[in-house]
Image (cartoon, chains in turn purple, blue):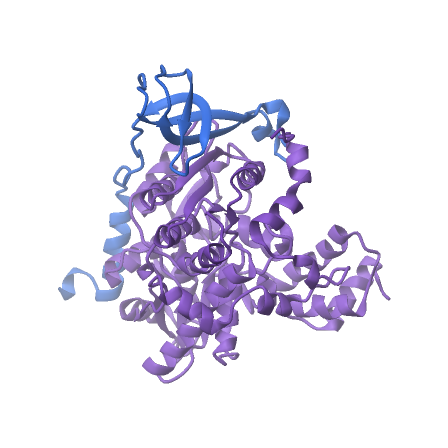
Length: 473
Length: 103
């Protein structure tokens, strides 16, 4: 075989490679314009909730416990106005086989790969998803390759990503590690082409549907345990799959009234593809470097149509700071006796503050935790930050400058959530749809699609289109 | 470092793209450096450190690259102790339980 392996040639074969590696013909859901039939894609290319429950239970995924954080609730009430301070709960997703909620996404992807006769699976991920795919592949006897962005140009690895490498290798996977840069996708494509393995993308309909069981279980567990649905569910937001799947699961359980809040760590100012910035961040995911780009242009993912569409489901999006998340990670450990994280602790930080805005009889849930350990714990992350010249200090977290310092709150009253204006994100998304699809007018169908995809109405979309000088056919 | 014998478990290194071959959307600082790749496998022949060696990975792929290390260890750990965390722990307990007076 003498394939052209230049960057341009491989990227040019992208659609062909992906079709082989996912086995979904996305064109049947397309309208030929901006709109595509999202619900039909989720229905026909995915699995039903019942099927997923069966797939996941066959590899012991899901049915994780919910835990009430009584001491953290008591602490929040000390800083809340009288009568305020909702009960804070977490869903202990660390109990999944690979130690995070990502096992739910991986269970479906690996099951699907096996069913369709693929010999192995490949995933491009530096996070928990790699360990999850490797673990599921081990259970189902498939080969597994994980491609991760791990080192800077001096071969210094982010400690958390090094731990993910170890976990993947422990589950028997091959780990291909790369230095910083978006050309990771090139290597990923060449591996798919060479091996003929399945692309266990995070963003397929069945990957996202795998998270629906989380939202569904959560609603059922609260009805059984407390006799009602929670009032707010806080979801750490990065690529959008966690928000999308959880919200869809809540809706499938009939819990439409639950407010879905996304939370990310604010890493503004750090460039995600920069070799020098790479090791200056103390969070490898759950941050604005993924959260905002994936909300405002979800179809940037490794599939033609991303099944994770966070703006469809987010009611509110809040940002917290690195120093605050480390502070709350300590609180979870010393006040609740639970060593977890980092991922879920971003939404835990937001929940600690949001609880103080809510009545005492209300309920707020942090819908995930993850296993912690070497590389992932605050100690290795903070000492790594210090080695990279990041200053660690106590003060007002609002003064934190990502890449320069980490500011622990002087006391818990200084923990805040900063609302990210969702209308701003929605506007960017609509603009991106116009620019990236290179259209000067939109169809009626596009208009309806954009309203649904931004959780707004046609009037909101029309206002933006008018500003852009785009007409409806 | 050190030499590898045929059959040893080794880590190898490749340059995927030289700086001048990097993708157009890459930021300036990243464009100044190569895109590098590391993978592990069984050495298919003897080799010295820094020499090219062919390996077979756990999935059975044959990959060529510069020999970096034999039996590479995991280097991540719990880091140095960070005393600032003790201050946080102490403060959290004081806020919740009212400090030493209430013990």
